[in-house]
Image (cartoon, rainbow, N blue to C red):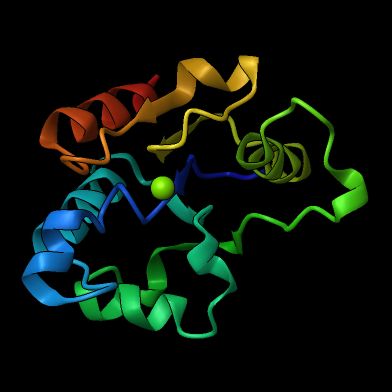
Amino acid sequence: MAASPLVYLDIDGVIVTDRSTKLGGAGYIPPGSAAMVVDILDQTGARLVVASTWRRDADCRDKLAKAGIGQDRYFIDWRTPDLLPEEEIADVPIRGSEIDRHLQRHRPARYVIIDDDPGMLPHQKHFHIQVDPSIGLTWTDAETAIALLRG
Ligand SMILES: [Mg+2]
């Protein structure tokens, strides 16, 4: 069982938005957005799990570190698994299923999902902070995450 609460983090539409891309180019993570993620972790003792497709990039953690999310912030199994094509079930959202696989493996006492993708499983909905991708992560979202992680 995971001893710390977990934050399942999406990146595109959450800390990378159209606005940040205009500001700093493709894939630019504004330090202010990264700081909100760090604040959630600081205030709750939660560890990070990357649920974004960025998890498949070799330099995913380096890019996040450059924005201010340190290498010491991750849960040991730091990214959600990829489902094999034959494991995908029709009409069941893929993002939610990937997160569910990780949840079943580690059974954290508390968790939140911060993602603009609505595709979560019914039992995850209460723990899902659905970010508006046109705005990105807000302090209101961060406060909701902190409240959920504190239980
Ligand atoms: Mg997204």
